[in-house]
Amino acid sequence: MKKNYVLELVKSNRSCRRFDASRPMELDLLRELVEHARLSASAANLQPLKYILSRDRARNDEIFSCLTWAAYLKDWKGPEEAERPTGYIVILGDLSITKNFRCDHGIAAQSILLGAREKGYAGCIFAAINHKRLRKILAVDDNQEILLVIALGKPVETAVIEDLEPGGDIRYYRDGDGVHHVPKRSLDEIIVNAW
Image (cartoon, rainbow, N blue to C red; front, side, top):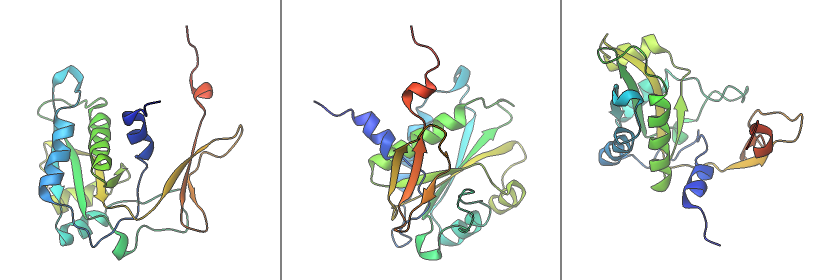
């Protein structure tokens, strides 16, 4: 039986929080990933999203300092320097186009991450951002809203999906070997009705 390529790509697309800092992201690849987002669906086809790309180590360190990493991992404050992302894509909403970005930034972020996975990279979407500090660091125009930050790089962690047992805990965790476990509700649990 033929494998479903898209499903396999989606399954491999876990939030990655540890990267090989010695493997820099190329600007052309970051641009290609934004092309995935550019060609994705947009509510009313307004296309209000703009992007800031970074592969510069000093700038990446500044962006890193504005992010909150893995809230469920209480004893972990984020990746060590050797495991930090080597690229970032900051998704902005252009307020001169619309004040309501609906789900555009979610669609764009997923398209970016699927494109990254297909190329052997991984990433993590951040909404827990120190907006004021990041706005200053990146000199974001007042007419633009910071919506999401995507950290990217070559992954050095393994993530596995697990079936969530009835009454089980949805919080992701790491085992003693550093494998990242992601519990998922069953298909039958999330489908409310089907005709």
